[in-house]
Image (tube, rainbow, N blue to C red; front, top):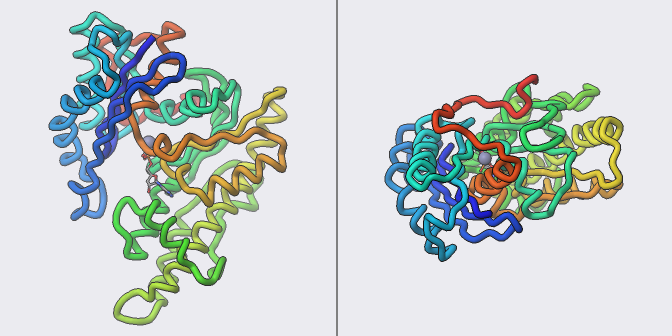
Length: 344
Ligand code: KG4
Ligand code: ZN
């Protein structure tokens, strides 16, 4: 079985083609970073128009990369939410049109489920597993019980972690999206863990996160730095402290979530997974990997290029749905909000 997946929920137009044995046949991504650069963030209207301009070209490129034709595709999947609704509509309508024209199933994929299921493609992670989902818009700890079945253990009460990375990076004078730039800058730090930054909610015995206080603390330190331009060395030290502080917060909260997961879902092969754009961060990955070693739980994180938004994750989630006959109708709506755990 082969599924083509389309992702257009933010500022990446992406198409992936995946076979059910886990082979990635195509992975093409067009990033709109340049188009949004002068605005310092993603402009929804520009994003939607850009998706329209690129989607047909990317589908053709993906088929060429996979050496396939439309007749070889067994299902067409697209992100139907959550995300910027104009962009979501573009990818969803493209997949619906292809499914209709070629008499193949249409698969409506939740973008977050795309991130959540990627480690099953890359590392064959078995259900149930504990997932830390960290992206530009979401920060959640969930137990992934099965396709479409999630139990949320905790989420953020204010900013998402990716948003906190991006806003802190912007204050440090770095371009958008700031996460990867901040990680690079932190490598140049000369004084490790120089700044004492707050770790909100760590003493609360739950799995909730809060990042807005951390962001404000970064602002205060930036404001206190002297000179007409920001002093490079100090900003690099601050980036390093920021990242280490985030790593500590995640470790404390994930340790709690692991205890709950291990108690409520006893398994001979317990797994912890980190996914979403922020999971590309090497400092955070290695700190979470250490935590898992201590807890005797297997650790998995997708390869860096499959952490940030891509079409492969949507194709794979589509395949997981298709193999369970979870096919969707052509009047499936585009959903700006679509929680994985509907009861949360
Ligand atoms: O999953 P994603 O590509 O898009 C959303 O679904 O939101 O995540 C994008 C987020 C951005 O906030 C970006 O700065 C962050 O992931 N990100 C990183 C890194 N690479 C991407 N944050 C920290 N370190 C990185 N290396
Ligand atoms: Zn994403």
